[in-house]
Length: 345
Image 1: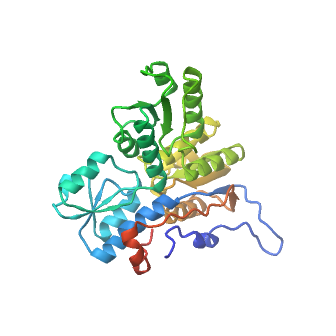
Image 2: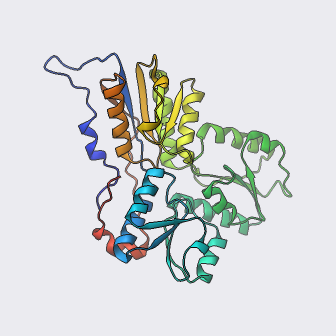
Image 3: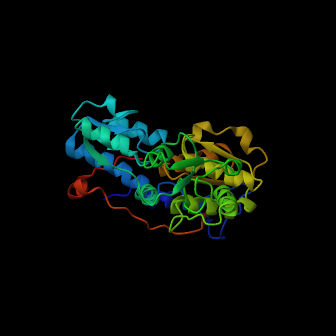
């Protein structure tokens, strides 16, 4: 299946080479972070919508944004996807895709009652957290869910065991916690959080409840961690950071926070149109990355803007870690996968 990341096109605009005299040392330089952009869960979710449109035809309904990126949603809408907030907006018996952020059992129940044909595009790493919540709830544990209120992923996870789950957003929330049995308590996390912020909350939970259990492996996803690590690594070497991503993208917002916590200005932009020239004054080295739901073409467009209109020259790629994670498609779509026509994102 063709890749939606367009990583093969990087070479068209990433170059440090000069002429016969060797590398050119431009006064103003762009540090392009790798990894960046689409993670495996996002690629899978977009593929699900594309394949469903080709196999079943429009209309295909998608509950919530398939991923948190305005450009991706607009592109898929133009291709025939209909995005709805609630299942009641889809006709009874219609075909509905659940977004990458996951849904609660109540939503699944409603889908059955409305006789909807469901394709589940929930990221497998989110599904992992749901399974953990189910497992701990069956053991009678109080579940401390670390995450952001009203985020689609958190709403879905809370729905797995609402009577047993308490949402914690800050270290101060831990101070106010009261649980019925401190010996039967666990914590889980939203997959797109800041590693540093979450670490502080977990440390405080462990200090208050020494017997607290955690997930077998951390819930924060590999892509979130890798992109944050890249930002931390490059922050000492740049004057500012631009993050390509939508404002409702949790993992993109965390990249901005991580950089600012390092003392370096950082800005989140949906695309190059949102770049404020004032941000670039007195900036000689600008770092560029993208959240896990941001298409690579938006990064390319931003690079071109910086080079053509803001005096930046060489583009140096800074690779922190190679990613080779792939997730399989939902079973009902696997036989049709080769029929995918890639939408340019």
